[in-house]
Length: 545
Image 1 (cartoon, rainbow, N blue to C red):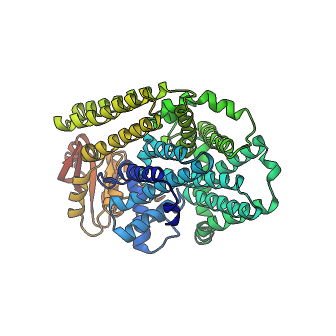
Image 2 (image 1 turned 120 degrees about the horizontal axis):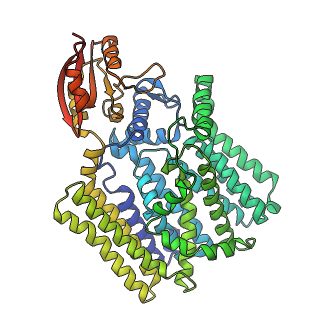
Image 3 (image 1 turned 90 degrees about the vertical axis):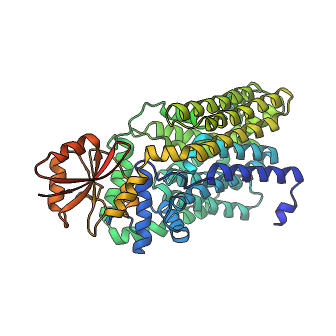
């Protein structure tokens, strides 16, 4: 704790504020909503089966090998289950911890380049950016990749600014370790992107003159050793089937084809960045001209080196993923540590009066708009009580007014803190007041509890005509899978009948919608017993007559 005692009082308060922001944005009611969508339940179930089987090498889903993704995120979830039990909070805790660690890395890096003020703003921007905040609270693979790439960005900056040959070797090894961890997080994409970012920076900045063979060797060896922790044993155990599914199907075909049905226009990720950076989008945009001027000159100072490196860390993933046929919002998450560093650089120029004070007022208006949008959503969609709606609108609106007043009196740093607090208040209001309603609309907590209570030994659950993956986790993998090991989503009643007849118990729990449940009740090839319903989903037991 000696380093903490060396900080002045102002920086201690700034660190306390950042910790408070992270606690609200990343940890508050982390398990307050059931696992959502297709991915969270599936990934959490793979991690649960790792713990249950004691096999942390071969991922399995519903007892079948599952080579879609690498091991690091599963390990984080499995570690959470081992320590805190199999809960939604434990499933998401790894992502939240990685998000906080990345904020700490950004703070440390920005402090080295520009001092405590720059570090505080960069950290608060990353903490309260909408997309970073959202994925920090999810059991997914996007945050582990973004975090490890963020660590690599910061390690390479310290390598570039290291004062001695020995320290350069140490930071090169740290860069390699982060690169190996990125491969454990999401496969080849991490090392490829890190390699392109570093290469682009080295070639354009003139840093190639300072490179040494020993540094490259240290980085390469470190990356290989970290990646080998999982890739060597999983290939040794599973051989070609792993290589085919993991590398060929889920790397090359995912990037080059629309096999996985996520087509979007080429500008899709530009829109995601602009929306995901809220409420800081206008602050960043106001500094584009100044950033362009800095990037036109080769970097000489640590400050300029960090701006160059952060710019490359944004540009490379943006171009790379924009060229991909398959696009999802989480793919672009790795640009956000670099965006936060660049936005912190812009904010310091605003504080010095050099440019862009208008962006504070635009951010305040944006914050007010978020509050109003939440209130409208609460009233029209979730039918929330009036007092909740008042809070949803009042807190961010109040923060917006205060931020605008502070900016008008040239208290710029205080205005940024107020915007960050307003963003955190939006996150808190969503988790406290809206999570329960969102959970019932996007998941099936009551129906899953009912299914768990009535499942007989050996009986499985089949989804018919509805794409739901909550049963995979909440029913501990007791779901029907096809011959390839994928969770079966039946498209026709014939598939349901065949599944019932082929089951070991002669009966199957079926999760479907109201229309199909009515049709099944009149099917002479099935005997149907309705067990419960929730948001147009019906749980029934189907047996052969």
